[in-house]
Amino acid sequence: MRRVSLNERLAQDAEATAEIYVALFYIDHPQLDAPIRLSTDNTERLSDDPLMYGTRSTWMNSKPQKEPFLFVLASAVIPSDLEDAPAAGSFILENVDNEIAKLLRSFTNLATLHLAIVLASSPNLVEAEFRDMKITSADIDAGEVTIEFSREDIEDEKYPNGRMTKDRFPGLHR
Image (cartoon, rainbow, N blue to C red; front, side, top):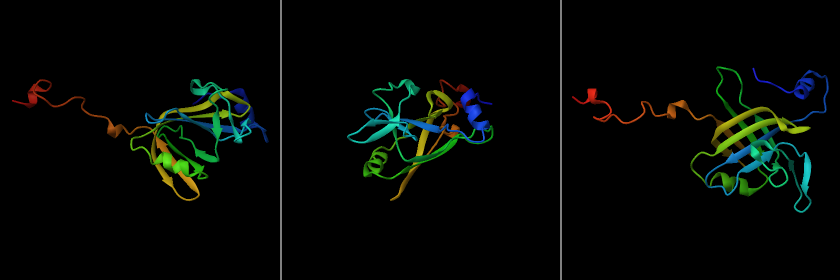
């Protein structure tokens, strides 16, 4: 069972509430100059020219004034906290710029995704967090980009560790 703040509990128990859940995405890859910070809420206007909205949060050691989470038109399916369910999810970005597709097609190894759920009224207080997820696929069409992510498969782990050489496993080489 995960802990939730009093504000979240009150919002969940209320018949109607003004609280808004916000998904914060932090995407990192060795080929990126800086991590990509995205938000599903236009909490405040960041600039007038160009017109940009976003969320200022200290999550992932971000500096709120210099490194805001930029607002994107997106919807998200967060990973389940059920014991038998895989830790996988997805988010769908509206394909409003060709640069999104160009960026997603520019690298071949997996990017790392960190996801946090916060309330718009308290963006520094993380209600749920999913770290070290890997972006596994990106389906791009004319209207939207569906990005799927999950934990790294345990089948990819090397087992047994090491090579089967005479020095390490002498019983196999008689």
